[in-house]
Structure formats: C-alpha cells, structure tokens
Image (cartoon, rainbow, N blue to C red; front, side, top):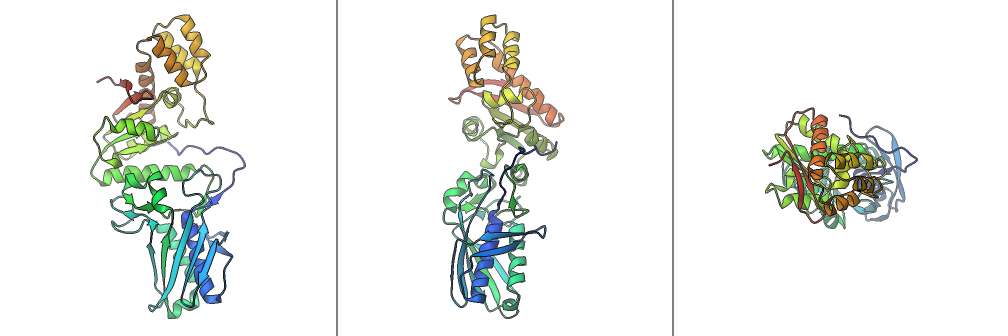
Length: 365
C-alpha cells in the first residue's frame, strides 16, 4: 500500500529543523568571515536546489559566533513550528574538520534501530550532510587553516520533545534535527510514513514483534492499562490506519492490537484508509445497517441515520441496549485491517468508550 495522499490545495511549504540548523551555521561562519551580522543565507538543499532563509539573531567575535533561525513548518502541523534553532560555531586548530554535536534541547539517542549511535545527538544524517556541504562551500578558505565546531541547541527542545515521537523511539531530553529534503511539504504524508516506519524499526531492533496501534494519545493511554509492553511497542497511527498495518505486515510483526474510539472505527470499518476529519465522513447509513443486523427497532435506525456524530450513535446504542452492535463494528474494522495487511499478520481490535472502558474486542477473547 502506498503512503496516503496529501490534501490538495494551495498550501504553504516550510523548511525543516535540519535546514534551520544549516542556515544558522552558514550565518555564523559568514559573520566570522565578514565580521558583520548576516540577515539572510542561501541554503543548498539535498536535491541541489536552494532556499533563502532569514536569520533571526546573529552575534559574532573573531573566532566564534552564535546565530539562530526560527523554524517555519509552513502549513504542516508540527510541534517544532516557531521553535528557535541556535548554532554556536567556533573555529578549531584542525584544518578541514567539521564537528557537529547537539547542545541543550537536542535529544540524545538511547535505543538502537534509528540509524544513529546510542549516546549520539539526535541529528539525522541528511542535516549533518547539509551542514557540512554548506559550510564547506561558504567557508572553503577558513577550512584550509582551521576546523569548525558546530553545536546546535533548541531552547524549548526539552519542552517540545515529549510532544513528538522521540520518547517512544528512545530519544530523550529534546527534539531531533530532521529532514530528508530540507523542505516541509504541507501535511506531508512522507514524513508521517517515515515516522511510522522508524517506530516499527525500533520495535524490531529491541527484539520485540508485538505492537499496539492506536488512533491517538488518549486511546494509547487506555491501551496501556491493558497491555504491559515497553513504550516503543505503542504506535499512534493517527488518520492513517491502512498504511500503518500494511507496514506492520511488511516488516513481519507477529501481532498487532488496534485500539480506538467509535469515530475513527466507524470510518475504518467502511474501508477508509485515511480518516482525517476533513477527508472523510462517518457513514450513518452504514452504521444504521449494522444496527439493523442487531435487530434494532425502526425508530432507533432512523435516529442513527439522523445522528450528528459517531459518538452520538454510540450514545443511542447504549441508551437502547442494542446488543452486538459494537462487536459488529470491531468485526468490520478487523476485516478491513486484515485486508490492508494482506492477511499476513494476526490482528485484534479493541473499541474503547470515552472513559477508557472496553466496549468490544474482536476476535472475542
């Protein structure tokens, strides 16, 4: 299954934390070379196009400088949008060497499986390469006599880190410096897909092969009350259930539990692979048919057809004691998820109510 399509429309692109760090590094070396504040730099991206980045602050001396960039995620909803990315750069006595490390607010790696050494700063290979290429280009003459040491820090990094996927993949005390293209595409499903793949790789690298997939943070919290598994085994798939379960199958997971609420499940049960609220609607006719199969009265079926939300349907079902309805929802989700996984992975579906109680499980225990 291909990664889900991003919404169409005239949305604004942004740039990554990696591009931000690269731009701040360039401004720092240029301010040392020219002994003046740098206001904008022209960053060379991995695909060899360029992007102009405004410099937020720039302080310099003869052999060192501190510059910063405000990360702009464009129209991509990202917790690092607006974060200040700071680079402290200084010259060293070793010609042609460029050292890159993380300071405060840049996470440290504590688990294998993400392509970085344990203990290393969470600065991914592409941003490292971008920084080296751009510093080599603009600082060619300095590098003939000196080396360059770059320390990247993010003042709000420790606060932002827990709001990202970092804790579950073993990156602690800050955010990651990321980016594969240097550009953030609006509502980028490429970055989402990469995040899911990375989380699943960590599960496998830790010697585990069971995952608990949930629609979001709240359903994950409820799932944690049921399953005594390591943090890295819990993966939030958000709106992209089909893609996530297909990746679990492709990577050879031995079991996937899928937990969520009726809103997402009502969409997933009809075969919707991307369940974003703006991208798909709950099919009340479908839910009314399930109620009909459970021998619900005609007036209840009409109430379901006229319901505003899936949660409203849940209330109607509970008020009228329609037995078997939630089991049917889970059964339909199960069929769809098995189909998306090409029947390659055992799956169990768990539907929660909004207090964390289990309304139904399928297959039944």
